[in-house]
Amino acid sequence: MRIVLLGAPGAGKGTQCKRIVAKYGLLHLSSGDILRQERVAGTELGKKAQSYMDSGALVPDEVIVGMMAGAINKASEAGFVLDGFPRTVHQAAELDRLLKASDEKKIDVVLNLQIDEQMVAQRMTGRRSCPQCGAVYHIENLKPKVEGICDNDGTELIQRPDDSIEVVMNRLKTYRRQTEPVVDYYKNKNGSTVYDIDANKDADEVSALVFEKLDALWL
Image (cartoon, rainbow, N blue to C red):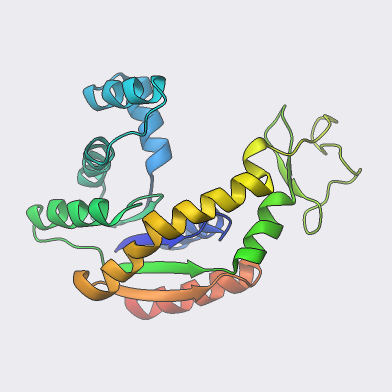
């Protein structure tokens, strides 16, 4: 099964992706992880990506698509979950073209995690991180044992710059402009099965909704 996981920042894509991979034995293909791997390996695509990042420019679609295509081609027949890709309609169209060229494959399922922006702001601005070990907490629903202190190593917790309200709202604007249209692309043109999932619920409830949809296709 080939799955695309979409949703705004803070919708819980990372959590749900891990659970889907564990339950169905799929490969987790994260664009961020693959980009880092290509850079560390010093591949031609990795070098190209690094040159753009060093200059502060966005990595072009063709470089990202090339990296993801390579990872997809190496994936087993069991399938994969795409996390963080495609981010634009152009990337989605290029992905379709590449899959079609490879044994007439296509994306089977698109899971669109829908969440209110107020909930996103609450989740992301309430996050606190340990600068030492990387552990993540929340001021409301995942509190440390001692307020403001990491359970693991006693380090004082911080709010990451990208969890500030200004950055969060800017990321949401970018998502609405660039990535939200990808949902309509899959609904209108791709022929994939698209499920809108209510991601305002807690993680376990969201997982139950996701598994209900996937089980019906899997069995």
